[in-house]
Image (tube, rainbow, N blue to C red; front, side):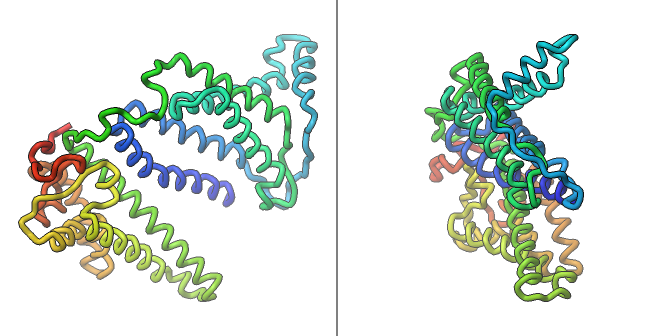
Length: 358
């Protein structure tokens, strides 16, 4: 149960980790985050997460596993088909043939994504299908890379063959998608500024929240591991106070440094936004911009007591102010006296691309 939870948690963390880079790449290659393409990438993420969990789950109890070997005869696939055809009844219902069909269908989405999202052809799909299948089979052969004393699932060469075939089939099926919608080539107008919508600013806030949360969890876990295995301070591990404080201080400090240097948070950079136009000196305006963002508001909770509650309330206020303040500049803009522009626009003409409602 614990190992299964860890497998799912790793898949979720991997998805969160990839979201912000995906948004950043989309805005730089296509100038925006298209809804349809975002859905495709989400589908790809869900697919790879499914492969991850299918490979590992259900994880057996190490004390009750039954060790198995490897099926290295490639002709086993042919024999399975012959067995299904020779058996009485409908061969399409034979377990051996159903297993082969399932192995093919399982990798059809991979080939589809290779052509539609990556813009590659049959050879790449073949290599990707074989490589991913080999990773799955090797994970099973090695007992999840040494977690178990032996393999508890068969390493099957037939699975390698049928999985690879599925990826090739998926790549061929993807030819039905119009050429203009396939591939990862940059759009000719990707560098042109676009109107700054409230939805775009909300996406920047989401990216900030995810990046801050991921950094916070990573730092907290690292501190706990250090306390447990290096400092050997069991009391500090159980208390959790040091890990919690570090999980807030480190990402808040990183956000502060980034904003002081560039004037932009991780979310601003991802969606190509910039705060500008304050009558205050730039360093002070940037400090106030950090204060009104996730970094400053989270750091406020470090003071404890009333400030802990105030931090949570101000985060809610910041979300509401996205929709209630003039031009949607939110709490960071109100505190710093700045407004939002597209980072690709001429900052000398900030009103050229004002915020509009979606």
